[in-house]
Length: 199
Ligand SMILES: [Zn+2]
Image (cartoon, rainbow, N blue to C red; front, side, top):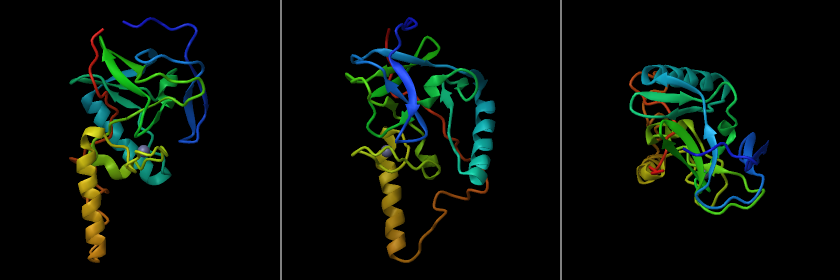
C-alpha cells in the first residue's frame, strides 16, 4: 500500500480545462503514487441511482460532473462529498496519470515523468454509451471530443461518422443514442481505472 506522501506532490489551482484542477507542485517521477481518491463506499444500485439523478440534474443545470468511481464488481466510491481533493483532477484524452485499485483503494499514479506546474490528468474512462453527456474540452492534440474510455474510441468514432453521414443525407437524428428523457436501461457514467497494478 502506498504511504501517505509528505511533502505532497500536488496543489489545487484554477484550470484552463475546467474549473479547478490539480497541479504538480514539484517534479514527479514516472510511476509515483500521487494522491488517493477517497469517498463514500456505495453499492452498484445506489451508484446507478445517483448516476441517474445526476443526468436529471445536468439537464436542468448543465453541470454533469461525475465523482463516482468503480471500485469492484459490488461497490463504487462516491468522491463527491467530504475531503477528496483528487476529485479536482480533470480528464484528458492524453493524460499524464492513471488510476489503479490497490487493495480496495483507488490511487492516482503518474504515467510518465511530470514537471512541476503541469496539470495532472487521467482518462475518466466513461462508457461510450454515455458519450453525448460528456463533451471533452481537454485541449490535447489527441482529443476525441468526448470523455470516453480509450478502448472504446473506435466505437465512438463509428458513432460520430454515422451521425455525420446521416446529417449529410439530411436525416439528422439528434437522439441517435436513444431517448434521453428516459434513464431506464441506460448506462450511467462512472469513472474507471484502466489498468491493473501489482504492488
Ligand atoms: Zn479530450
